[in-house]
Image (cartoon, rainbow, N blue to C red; front, side, top):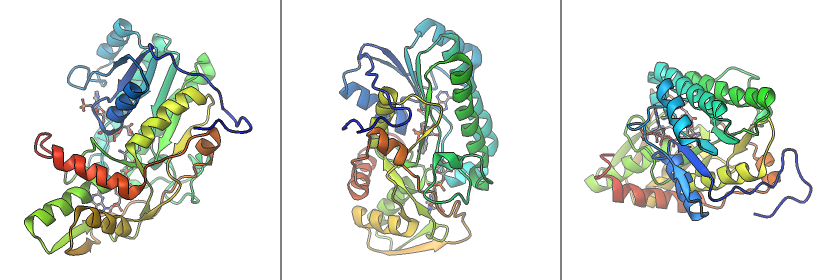
Amino acid sequence: MSSPASAPCGYIHRPLDRSARVFVAGSRGLVGSAVCRHLEREGFTDVVGPGSAQLDLRERRAVLDWFAATRPDVVVLAAARVGGIKANATRPTEFLSDNLRIQVNVLDAALEQGVEQLLFLGSSCVYPKFADQPIREEALLTGALEPTNDAYAIAKIAGLLHVQAVRRQHGLPWISAMPTNLYGPGDNFHPEHSHVLASLIRRFHEARTAGAQRVVNWGTGTPRREFLHVDDLARACLYLLEHYDADGSVNVGTGTDLTIREAAELVAEVVGYQGAIEWDAAQPDGTPRKVLDVSRITTLGWAPCIGLREGIAEAYAWYVEHRRSAAL
Ligand SMILES: NC(=O)C1=CN([C@@H]2O[C@H](COP(=O)(O)OP(=O)(O)OC[C@H]3O[C@@H](n4cnc5c(N)ncnc54)[C@H](OP(=O)(O)O)[C@@H]3O)[C@@H](O)[C@H]2O)C=CC1
Ligand SMILES: C[C@H]1O[C@H](OP(=O)(O)OP(=O)(O)OC[C@H]2O[C@@H](n3cnc4c(=O)[nH]c(N)nc43)[C@H](O)[C@@H]2O)[C@@H](O)[C@@H](O)C1=O
């Protein structure tokens, strides 16, 4: 990445010590596993990331004790209850309660241990349903949320404000990023709870292998979405930890979007499905559009590099290889 010509707001150059102990919360998930892969490629030698079976981040005492015993130098908070539109719309209690508890426990424990650097991952769903497009970071809290994921969004907004509160009150250089819709190896391919690209990959693969002549997707296909490969996000996470220190969150995306119908046609082409593609308008569409304004991270000197077609092909290859073992 080239360093920006004139140092933009929040720009710093603070390379991380490759021997620093980095806690990747959510290390087994889509984002966490990509962050761990990237840190390993970058030469980090002390990356720790217990899964939820070893450390349930909803359990406050266990989290405080783990931090006191492990004393990480850096934390990437990529642990959360996460799911697509139907999971969010049908389980708002868990999406609010689990995520608030995970965030409060990890952030409180990190403060108690004086963790110097922390990156909190929010989501593009924090922005108002009808925010001006592309969505700037300043649009936060300027309008009503999308009802299908308002519980999750409120939890994420609470996390963002928690990070800002620690910055103001304790002066720690913690930061927040707002990623757009993600996809890639290690995604959740559950037929009901997954995000759209993963769900389409599974649906078209199963249809092709079964010789089906039609598939039915959710909604009208008309909403627009922006998709960022998770390996690009992982690079952005380290880049922000080493080049950004300011109160404001940073959108992370491609700055381009397409309709769900266009995405479905692209997935069908990659998977090799040639039957009919139909739409069930009784299923929720969600936000009509949420493409991010990525000028802040672009000015900081970062840009994505994995194209959508190439990325979907890689995600599909991972799904085919892992679909049996991971009981996807
Ligand atoms: N996927 C997307 O499109 C987007 C994701 N994000 C954000 O990125 C982050 C990661 O999401 P993603 O990787 O997609 O999600 P995944 O569901 O793939 O991974 C979530 C991770 O969180 C861990 N986790 C969940 N609950 C607990 C718990 N109680 N205790 C400990 N660990 C827990 C899981 O651990 P285990 O596997 O061990 O159970 C898992 O590793 C989240 O903050 C999400 O909001 C933001 C924008 C878009
Ligand atoms: C990242 C962001 O992701 C979530 O928001 P979302 O972008 O609306 O979520 P989604 O990826 O599940 O759906 C995108 C669109 O796709 C259409 N769609 C068609 N067919 C399928 C389908 O088979 N599965 C899914 N999930 N959607 C489908 C669906 O009707 C909708 O129009 C937040 O909950 C929250 O998790 C969040 O932060």
